[in-house]
Image (cartoon, rainbow, N blue to C red):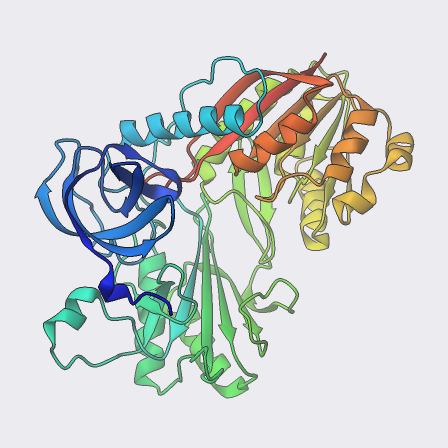
Length: 469
């Protein structure tokens, strides 16, 4: 029989000694590691153990015996509940220091390769309101905080429009204000919730698969343009048009208004039609004199200002002189490809999402860039020896894969192509380390630069330069 949660012990006076993976911190009891979220090194806490395994335990701080002098006051009222921005209680310099250590540790421990000195993590100038995209979820009952439950009061479970509680697909915290995305994001979200409640719109119940309102995506561009995508669970034309007309009238800042009807059991909408209701079919981002169109299905780095710093690092590592053929694999909407095009002889971009490739081509055309070619398809199916023979030998390759990293079959093709340099941009240093180890016989790592795209979180982007041995 499984052990009941209330049978787990309380550990008194645990000293938190270091940060750990996934935004947690940890201390030790004998040989046992204890992970405690929302704490920082130097805290001494009483911990209610929630989970116990042979080599580690996880728990929640139920009392602070002593607070660390390192600790800072979180700025968000939802800190500790919504699951985002877990490091608001940690000074930013310490966040950057740990991210640098995290990259160094994962590349060395997982990759087991020789490394140059890892450069200090490049910090983000903007640490609040830095995201250009957020997705919110509707729920027919808002999640009650532990404090509300413990109070014993009779609290009305109002509908919610906010974020999922960590590890809970059916629990949504209603958000009063989010510090991640600039105006008018908060006003659009709160007004949508108010309007839907006042006009009797039903909010989704994911367990029963009932309720009209499912999701809302808001994209804000550095140009001031705003895209809103509202996801409905059924084709209720009257209510759809009433809500969208209200949002368009209430927020003239919305330059692109879409809706999606999703009748599936999951929230993924990439495979569904996105209907343009009003405005332009895209918003625009600008970077170093270039304009990039971002459609409803486009991937664009969610921290626009820091994306510029990231791409400058990648371009610098590529060391282009104007004579090279550059391959940009996992090109997305062609941002890196077009950003580097002026410094290369030709650029070949490959991406899985056809809509993103169409945006990449339009971005080249709109910016007067004539030396790029883009191809859509699964990387392991598109990139083969024949593709390289048709498009020319790559002198330099830039890789910017998803979190899962590069497929081993793609790495085999890259090794046969043998470019002089590879620049590997990764949002997951662990899978990056795995891939670097597969290329280690042919390439040596000559530069490592972590970049902080997501302040107050444990996530880190990392750029590595590899030179052919």
